Length: 154
View 1 (spheres, rainbow, N blue to C red):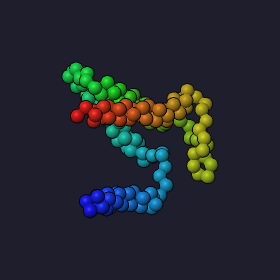
View 2 (view 1 turned 135 degrees about the vertical axis):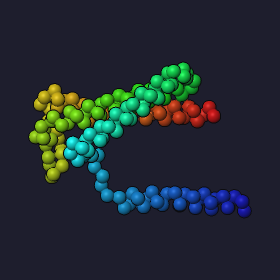
View 3 (view 1 turned 60 degrees about the horizontal axis):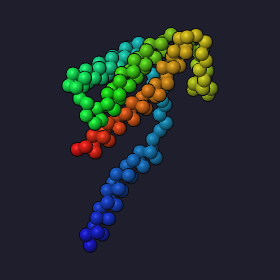
View 4 (view 1 turned 120 degrees about the vertical axis):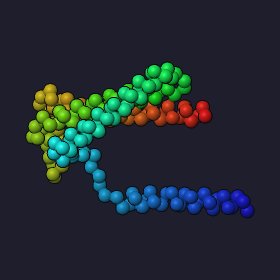
């Protein structure tokens, strides 16, 4: 009887947790990966956010180095923080460089950007900055590794 109650409870939990997610996937609308900032005010406030995030990660790094934390998981966490600092620098500079890129470099098809042509070093720098996921994904992998290590040691 107790085994049957556990199965019923776990099924209810699954139903209660999975159904809303499936509902959201079924009713969602397309979301584009490109975010416009709405003029110079939007860009400036966005850049302030990057600056504050950058400063917060530097502060954490300084505190970790001052505390001389060297146990399990701290190396991975420091790698995560360094990669996030690099990501912030990359995206911050990419947002500013975007302002200098000629709009004709964005080749549109059906009203959406299909290609980007590189004609100057500035164009190349902008394109390289748009590959920020090559820094961000490893950063989150390092965070996951640190959290996994810490989860095992507690």
